[in-house]
Length: 173
Image (cartoon, rainbow, N blue to C red; front, side, top):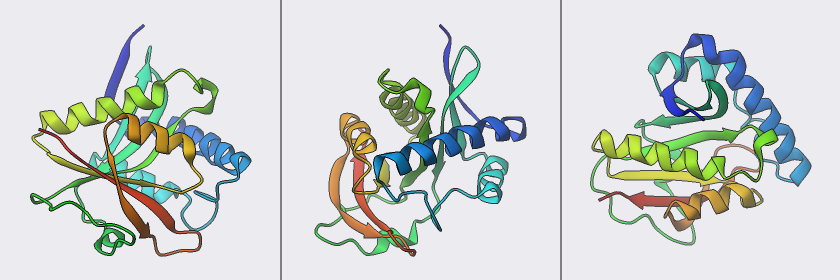
């Protein structure tokens, strides 16, 4: 078995969108409104992140199993946090967004492996602070985030309907 994490490219777009669309359906089936309307990952947005080199892929034997965006651009919605606070930032942080694992692989722990590999990429790049968020009804993602050592910091509100998100933070040593 060949497990790899790599940046995506233009040729990966179709596979990325397949995973995102399958994940959207899985979220809907679970009762989570995440990725259902205005916050749904848009094709243009994914293409833009691919061009910037911000899209990361988790592959097994060259097959795309997972996708995520990892960016150092400031997340404006993180400026205001309710029911908690961010730990004092040591400068710039990286945010992980649009994290999705192909639902056909549920129960195999690939989400945890992928997130840990993303953290290794951060460590290799000298990034010490990582932030991530998920919808309160997305319990599967909450488990993945917690298993990686992130701490729950409060609730942020993204600028659209059903935009409430649990916010997490992790500092690497």
